[in-house]
Amino acid sequence: MGKITNDTFLRAAKGEKTDHVPVWYMRQAGRSQPEYRKLKEKYSLFEITHQPELCAYVTRLPVENYNVDAAILYKDIMTPLPALGVNVEIVGGVGPVIDNPVRTVSDVDKLGELHPEKDIDYVLETIKILTEEQLTVPLIGFGGAPFTLASYMVEGGPSKNYHKTKAFMYSEPKAWALLMDKLADMTVAYLKAQINAGASAVQLFDSWVGALSRADYCAYIKPVMEKIFTELKNENVPLIMHGVGASHLALEWNDLPLDVVGLDWRLPIADARKMGITKAVQGNLDPAVLISSWDVIERKAKEIIDEGIQKPGYIFNLGHGVFPDVNPDTLKKLTAFVHEYSAEKLKQ
Ligand SMILES: Cc1c2[nH]c(c1CCC(=O)O)Cc1[nH]c(c(CCC(=O)O)c1C)Cc1[nH]c(c(CCC(=O)O)c1C)Cc1[nH]c(c(C)c1CCC(=O)O)C2
Image 1 (cartoon, rainbow, N blue to C red):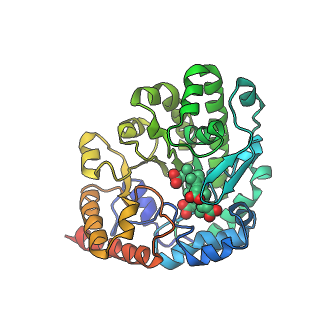
Image 2: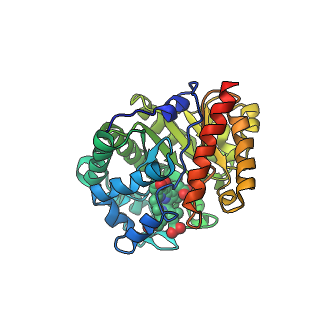
Image 3: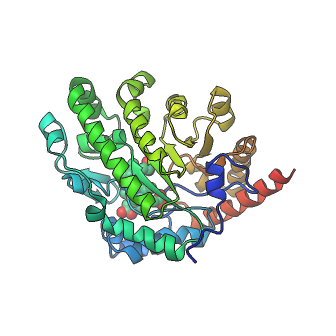
């Protein structure tokens, strides 16, 4: 074990032809799984991630239970922030909460740097266990993108409209640029360390950046994303971008030096390609569909696959994460369906 025998996900991410459409699910490791819920009675997310053997087990569970074509490392986008001096706690049913928000120039000045070998040695150890010994599918490493991380850091927790974050961005442009720079440096160090430890691809989650207009994305965010992806390009692993409610930014992502554009359910894949998306595409079943009847799930999955396979470079996923009330059997059945249906179609 420990050698990749199924590289379908990596080939699709590079835009190559595959025999079947590869599948994985954002938030596949988590509360929809009874084994995970049982562990959570005893340990918090941070307690699990600090125990590499246990964290590797949680990461492996969806691969074993659903037969997905890639694993995503179990941890959170908040994982590296304590090293910068940000006090994060994951509060059940709420999300990440930060008791020392970043709201002034001096708060930004005070932020520290990430030294991966020292600060997140437990993450790197988990990656080594998984990729050297256990997995036969690629492991996806990931991080939060600067806007999404900053949204939690400035608001102090989850938010609906990111008013404080945007107000900071507009009224303190120099401090904002410094914050983006610090988060970009952290992200590059974080993702490079995950790749060096054995991750075969990395995804940047900019979950909440869709709150910005296209013009503001270009003015305040795009340059920092350009810098991150340019630095990661040399690592020679597929680079994936994902955000929610960000269809108006998809063409900007397509411009960046990355490999895969992640789409949520709002923009059909065929429309995205018509609009000018030339990169590989990942997505985009609405996660809410997973709690409807199988006929609906199958019909929606078929529609998406039919569009996806019009061009090489397609990865099946959801438009956002699996939520807790999804039945694990549904994910297992869906994975088998995507594999079989796409293999049949790709033969034709
Ligand atoms: C914005 C964001 C966060 N975390 C993440 C994002 C980007 C993706 C997205 O937009 O959903 C990414 C993330 N978080 C987690 C993973 C694990 C890997 C996987 O996808 O399977 C991944 C990829 C574990 C987790 N991260 C979290 C959980 C659930 C709580 C727990 O089990 O402790 C898990 C499994 C907590 C968390 N952490 C965050 C939120 C919004 C929450 C959920 C709050 C809630 O509903 O309780 C921040």
